[in-house]
Image 1 (cartoon, rainbow, N blue to C red):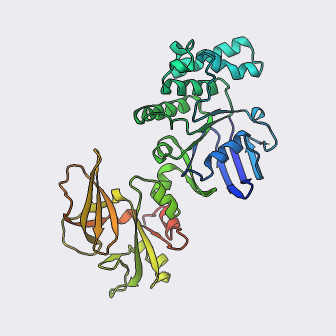
Image 2 (cartoon, rainbow, N blue to C red):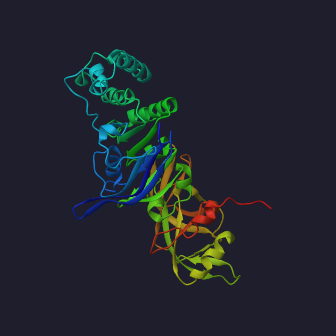
Image 3 (cartoon, one colour):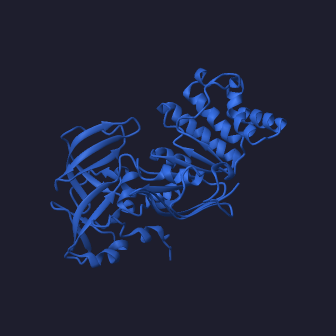
Length: 376
């Protein structure tokens, strides 16, 4: 087992910078997921760790060893690819044995590791079949088995579930969780699927444009995004962003003028926002933190008209056009009777509010939400 440390890592392809000076600590035995949209640099980062690409600048350490100049086979890693990369002319057992045979591993060790991995993945009955005779899920298990028998210091996985259907992906996510609990091997996993990232990881690194935007435990990153990119990327439906100008109410309290109505700023954030009086600020609120209010239009109750109703089984997503002209989404209980054209009042959960700078996109209150509240 080993930790992986990336320090100021850069990868350029001619005039294109795919990885732009990232630093990341991947703890020993952790399951770290690199997540982000296509083209953000996550797969290139994985290939740099694997030794399949050479870094333009920066350091890659596996354990205590800097491996920038080490070849892939010298790095004690095993990689699972999106396309499985199984040899079609070899049986499952031969595919799993192949890497060990190339390293001149003793026959009894090879056989023991293959049998153990096959039992762990429940593919004993498939050992004599060839890849063409297997389903997608079975091929994925074989690819995992081929990596497991190597007994590497680090597993690297590049969107290994993306070719599976939705039901099988859910099943395989659970299997990967169980597998990691049993093996405790340091794992770096790449995906663009935020649900996969949130489900599998004990640490996620959200990437965009070759840079890491935020690192942390999935729930913490979700609840307290550092910027609008992270806030908008994680979550489905994504976070609502509402524009408004900061002003001081007659009472002296701080509020946002949203056009047709106002939003009161909670006292705990007022001092941080007060020096922005007269300026535009972005209010962020997730759809699941927006509820329907049966009370009249009062402070922090926002009237609007339902324009779209999307039943999604466990929830119903409403698209609501506010009197300001801005449109936001609310996720409500599926048994609530709401139809297109209904007039509704929306209330925002005060503990789930976010405020962002419109120019930089950074959270204005990030450190305030990170600091635990102390009860006197």
